[in-house]
Image (cartoon, rainbow over all chains, first blue to last red; front, side):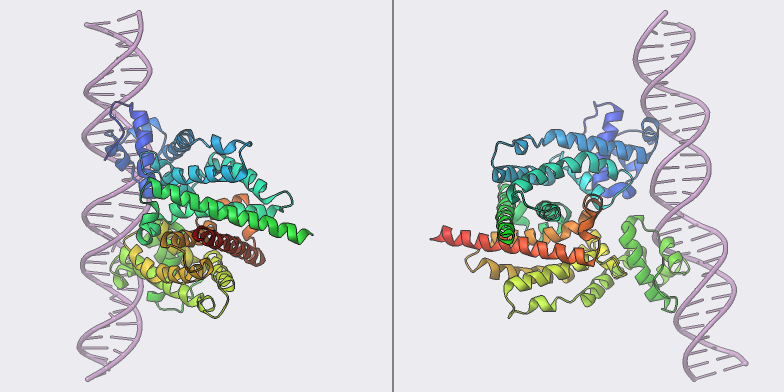
Length: 217
Length: 217
DNA sequence: CAATGTATTAAACATCTGTTTGAAATGACT
DNA sequence: AGTCATTTCAAACAGATGTTTAATACATTG
């Protein structure tokens, strides 16, 4: 049930347990007693090491972002020498795995998407550190696929179309698991789903690029 | 701040206020005192009319679903005589408006999507009443666009691709509002966004249908 | 009008929650 | 061993929260 070894110092144990519990139950529903008992630590420790529950939350959130970025670097999709179709496929595969990874690191993305769905004061930091870079990279790729004459609003909407297809599996996971569990059952299913989203998006983007060309002439 | 008239009986006022507050803050963070003070009602009323806070929640959820379905019927997209492209556009436009409606009825979809993102015991009822019919209708439309030989997994994935593009604007609204607020600023922007999602999806679906034909021969 | 069932209310209850406190334990260094 | 800063701990505190109670007001009916 608890994957954080007791050999770690109390400070780190608290942070990692906090990521788990906050991810599972959200900020409000999580009690410091929950966290402390799971970390095998006295209740007062939270206020001793971190000033308050809220401060622990924002520290845990920052750590989650840092560790997730570390575990899933997006370097391969950044390679501008690759064809844009390949880059998009790489981006989506990486993003989807990041979202659906159910191993210990899975808590990280769960905590982050929870913060997005129910923003606390800490959201702005999340957006700046975790979201904007992903948006920028994806925008770069999408622009390449759409061709030059694409207007700003179209690019933005296409961007959200791609991201939305991926995030569906995180935010509506409870539904997907009940209605179509086979789509995310195991590693190969996830890879297949990622391939689908890439294909779906590339087909749409290239067609939209053509529509723009036709409209222009 | 409070849109429920005092002339309504206490029972109904409690239900409608509950929809609002639960939608805003979630089940756990909502207190019965919040609800009662907004409804101008004594604290004991919740336990008098509904056995408990939890029971009030599930009753409010059921009412939200019922009223949302009533307000946004999907009859037009059900017309099998219309071309599938038109039906898909109608479905998406309806769905997106349902999600983004910020009027009084907006609380309904907020409550429902919150239940999806953070399921309580009441989720199964939601899925049966509110989700499955939408899925079935959309599946019907998608199958028409994909042509007959589409296999089950492909249909399911395409379905989620369409829904994901719409739900993006609900679940990640906090991000969209900060990075691309103009896309959902007003009625015409929403209509334009709906048109984009329909176009994006139709282009992808028809291309995927062609890919399947080519692969078959 | 009296009686009876229903609705409303203020107060109390028991439990939970974040935080504080002051003492005890631990460890480092002279 | 003795001093000192740091860490850990049990206990308590103050406020909030879901629920109950018992008394009061209201309305309907015979």
